[in-house]
Length: 336
Image (cartoon, rainbow, N blue to C red):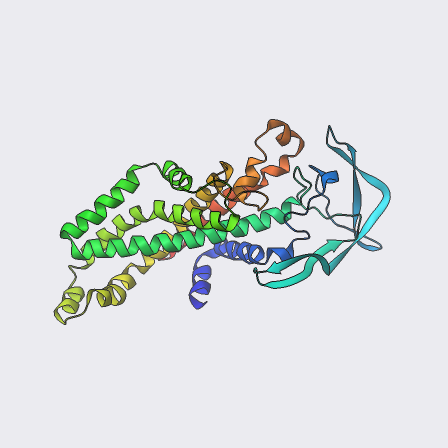
């Protein structure tokens, strides 16, 4: 936790925003008003309905559909619903463990809070975006962790041992780097049957992203290792009989830590885009579970974009996350 706080402090405003978004998405079921699969066919492509402050308190107007073909709506005259905080609503499992029905905000029926509108099935887009963003965060973090463990280990061993070990590791990495990452991701995903459950699909995507990302990091770590092993303190450690694992953990990795921190933050955007791209193509997380990619796929039609442009918010959120992580990496690099 201390390391995380230090990283956020060094990350400036971008780090604080990312920490806030991660916290909101981690406990998304509490912060959002509805479940991600709460279907309302009578509110298909409904616009946003935001709470208002009136003399009688905080309320929302009641929305009704006028024409399902043109997807037009109107507020019912004189009809409002009261908004409540820390109230009972859809049941969920917080962090997948704790059963609860508490939500930060909700409205009395027939009113409905919808900060960003709804999708084709009348599901609240804001609720789905928050849960989809959590998936992007978690998959990216786990993918980066696996990729870095493999890449750093391969780079350290390759640069330290040299010889045929170096040749085998580097030639293997070059094979992965020679294949365009999108095709490699699609090929790896194609090894598994379509329609697998979302949990298994998440594991497959994490493995695919880690498979793509380790090689370039291994090459850089190899170069840094080859330059450091010539330093006097490494030579002294070898002469004193220190084992390679001890040299790695006590001497090499601490001297690489500034680069590794920056590399981690700059690698996360690629994983976010990779997951969103696979889901957009129908090879990742399958509906009804939300991900930023499969939600963006719902907005492919020009007709949908004209009548419900808010469905593009998932794509905008991907762009915002990528920019924030890039800014975080740049800020940390400048502060070194």
